[in-house]
Amino acid sequence: VLELCVLALLRDGERYSYELVRALGDADGLVTTEGTLYPMLGRLRREGVVDTTWRESPSGPPRRYYRLTPDGQAALDGFVIEWTRFRGSVDALLGNGVLR
Amino acid sequence: MTTDIHPLAAEYLERLRRAARRVPPGRRRELLAEIEGHLSEAIEPGASDTHALTVLDKLGDPEAIIAAEMPRPDESPERRGAREWAALILLPFGGFIFGVGWLAGLILLWSSRGWTTRDKWIGTLVVPPSAAGRGGSARRDRIRPSAKAADIERRCSRRTKNGWPHGSARRAR
Image 1 (cartoon, rainbow over the protein chains, first blue to last red):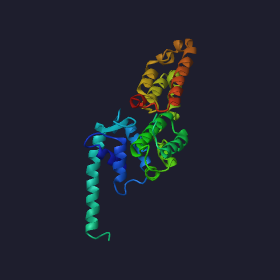
Image 2: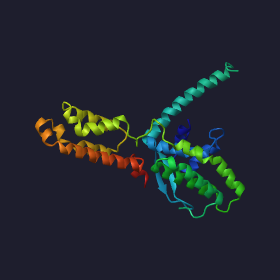
Image 3: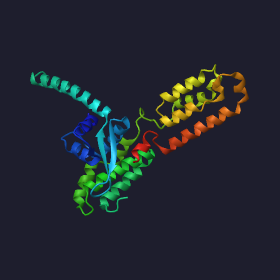
């Protein structure tokens, strides 16, 4: 799911690694250690769902910008459909009091 | 690399570098660059120790980061398995096995994730005489197939030592 959250964060355009990691780190209950997200970003690059470019930053070392590839966009679209269905089912069960 | 860095961040990076020794070189370089970027974004050189410790605590233990970076058993394109060895043997010598061994080697070569497309083309275009399917010529050129094998072998081991064969050039930019 975390991988797909990264793809979702990139839906509206590119972001650099630190932005991505902080956005995930600040989401409640999603991430315990921010550092382990970097290996995950590496996996996404190798899987070809994101593409990256290094660019100079106004301060400090160069930043690595991530953006979705067509494969990444397709993976995200599939996930959104699946997730909506899954959430709908769980919400319906909770709402009906079945799981209380 | 980074000149201005908080002492606690520098200490953390040093621990990470030590722990990262067992990570393949290409991945190690990328990971260290990312974490270094994170630290320089999050901790000003003159920040308080308390702030630095909070950032480092959120980042997590270097060992845990390295554990997450270690290649999983299902993604090991830089390692040579049975498929890669079979391709290495069948490409130069497979022609002797009823003439179809070379073709089998070719299929194994192209279906493997262990080599770059360039390596695969080299393996394909360097056709050993044994694959020409003529018994006579295969016997006359007995020396040459092994020279080809050694050449392919050499390319592969060089690739392996470099770390990631996949997209390393692309990522380097």
